[in-house]
Amino acid sequence: MPERNLDFDSVIDRRNTNCLKYDFAKRRGLPEDVLPFWVADMDFATSSYVEDALADRIKHGIFGYSEVGTEYFNAVCGWMERHHGWKPEEKWLVKTPGVVFALAMAVKAYTEPGDAVLLQSPVYYPFSEVIEDNGRRVVSNTLYLGGDNRYHMDFEDFERKIVEEKIKLFFLCNPHNPVGRVWTREELETIGDICVQRHVIVVSDEIHQDFTFRGKHHVFAGLKKEYEDIALVCTSPSKTFNLASMLVSNIFIPNPSLRRKFRKELDAAGISQLSILGLTACEAAYSKGEEWYQAMYSYVADNIAFTEQYIEKNFGEKSRSVRMTDHEGTYLVWLDFRGTGLPAEELDERIIHRAKLWLDSGKIFGESGRGFQRINVACPRGVLSEALERIRKVIQE
Ligand SMILES: Cc1ncc(COP(=O)(O)O)c(C=O)c1O
Image (tube, rainbow, N blue to C red; front, side, top):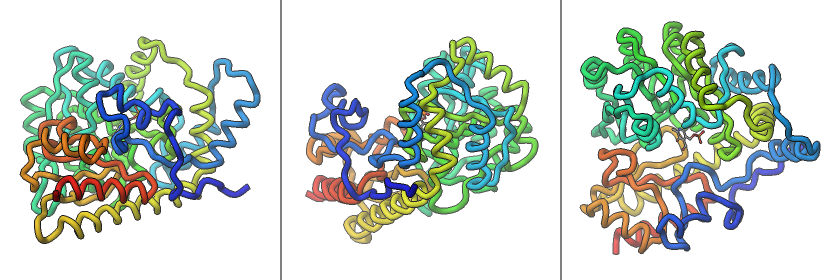
């Protein structure tokens, strides 16, 4: 049966579906009619193969405790091998109900209350939340925006912070949300070697691995044999196939001792099996979703190019009041509004109340995100175009 869900231009009404993105604006203090571009899910229906696999499973009618075996692993591993050239072993796999959940488990497993955990802000804000909410401290090796309009890592600061703050755990965002970088082999090996030498465990959050538009995604643990000893590789079909509420992620932990400690935290949290619907969706997506993925990927790539051209045409040369930072990966585009001269609060006010758009304000990703906004472009092009036009109006008027 051919793939049915290849129309990405049509708008699917998500209102009144218990949709976090569309149905909760008012409850969160925003105007009810804002157009949302914040949370990282897509306004596209997933692959019809996933829909069909779920429908078949639902028809069975019994939803008792469930587990999956080698076929599931082969689907996940096959995807990793075909798309990222990395072949994990079955025993490395630990399944969790989400990547953020896995980050929290890593904090508990590998650090003590009061310890510092390293991250690279501006970064996906739950990174800091799971550190602080577990009574640990956030230390940032803050990224900087270079003259080339790309973000970079400060390696000296990275090593200094590890030594000074006695860092045992580092959260790597690979590719990086929100700055859109796909880290190069050289960058990853520079920090990887420091982590090996300084005995730092690296949690590599690779949830955006399938959205690399420039460069190449490198699975951190696949770069050097010795990285397998210090790494947790966090993957999930949730971004790639729009399955966030299915609550399934696949965490690869090659080092048996790190894996044991991690599993112990899962036990302590009372997690054993996941939902059969999530597992079914994951297996179908990775084993049958290729055509859908390729079509969705091209559409999103075109949306990114569309955004880049729009910004260049309307804010280029003359004013540079809004700039799009060089975008390599993820479907979350990072816009620099500092050239408008507007204070961050005034910028938020214009975007939310005048443009009636719900983006993610840059400052929630850390102080270094002030003056930026993140926009999710995984939506029909007509909707994206409307958002960009509204931004132009409230900035230029
Ligand atoms: C870098 C990163 N990690 C994790 C997540 C969320 O993962 P999950 O929903 O599996 O907890 C997101 C979602 O936006 C993300 O951008």
